[in-house]
Length: 327
Ligand SMILES: NC(=O)c1ccc[n+]([C@@H]2O[C@H](COP(=O)([O-])OP(=O)(O)OC[C@H]3O[C@@H](n4cnc5c(N)ncnc54)[C@H](OP(=O)(O)O)[C@@H]3O)[C@@H](O)[C@H]2O)c1
Image (cartoon, rainbow, N blue to C red; front, side, top):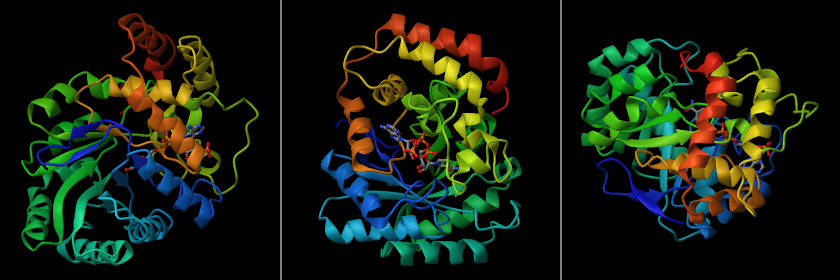
C-alpha cells in the first residue's frame, strides 16, 4: 500500500481505501461475517481510511466499523456523512439542530468521541451559497465533535464552489474511466489549495471490474436493479450514469488494454491513481477477495502514456456525449 496526504489534515491515507456503502445496504444481502471479513482484509492490506455514511443500512455500516475498531488496534480514519436522512434535500434541512442530531447518531454508532471527517452528503447545489452552514460545521470542530469536515458532491461546479470555504478539507466526487470531467478544471484547483479528493464509485458500481454481462441479474434490494434510471437517487450513482449496454461495450475496449496479470478492477483503480490530485480511491468491497484484488492496484507500476491516451479515446468515443456535461 502507498499513502497520500489528505488535504491539510496531516493524515496520510491509503491510496486504495475502503467504501463501506455495500456492507451497509442497497447492494443485495451482505452478511455481518462477510462484511467484517472484507473490513479486516482491508486493514491487512494496509488500508487506513474508510468511507461510510449514517444512512448506509440506517447506521449498520457505521456499527460494523465500530466492531472492526474494537477487534483491531490499527489506527483507522473514518469519514462519515450526514444529510441524507432528510426526506427531501433542502438547505434549511442543514440546520444546527438537525446536524447536531445526525452527528450524535454517528458518534454513537461509531463509538467515538469525535468524528474524524464529516462530509455533507450530496446536498443541493444551493447549499454551497449558504456560508452559514459551513459556519455551523466550524462550531462543531471548535466544540470537539468533528476533527475535520468535507463534502461529497454530485457536480463539478459544486466541488469548485465548496473549496472556496477554507476549512473544507476534502471533496468526494465520482471519478473513474467513465467520469473524467473532474480532472479538467477541478483537480488542478483542488491541488493548488491542498484539498483532498476522494474518488468514489471508482469501479462504476462494478461495471469496470469487467465481470458484468448483458444478462447479469441484481437482487431487488440492489440499486443496480432499483435505481437504473435514477428512481431513488441521482442516476449518476448507479453505473456512473452510463447506459448499461454502452458501458459493457466500453469495458470490452478497456479490457484489450490490460497488462498481463492485471485484473480489470486493478487497472481501473490504477488509472485513477495516475492523477496526483487524487488522494485515494474508495472502492466498495463486499468480500475479502474483492478487497485484496482492489488493494493490489496500489502496487502496480504506472500506466504508460499510450494506455492513458487509449482510455481517454474510449471515453471520448463512447461515453463523453452522454455523461460529460451532466455532472
Ligand atoms: N453520495 C455519496 O457520497 C456516495 C455515493 C456512492 C458511493 N459512495 C462511496 O463510494 C464508495 C464506492 O462506490 P460504490 O461502492 O458505489 O461503487 P464501486 O466502488 O464502483 O463498486 C463497488 C462494487 O463493485 C463490486 N466489486 C468491488 N470490487 C470488486 C472486485 N475486485 N471484483 C469484482 N467486483 C468487485 C462489488 O459489488 P458486487 O460484488 O455486488 O458486484 C462492490 O460493492 C461507496 O462504498 C461509498 O463509500 C458515496
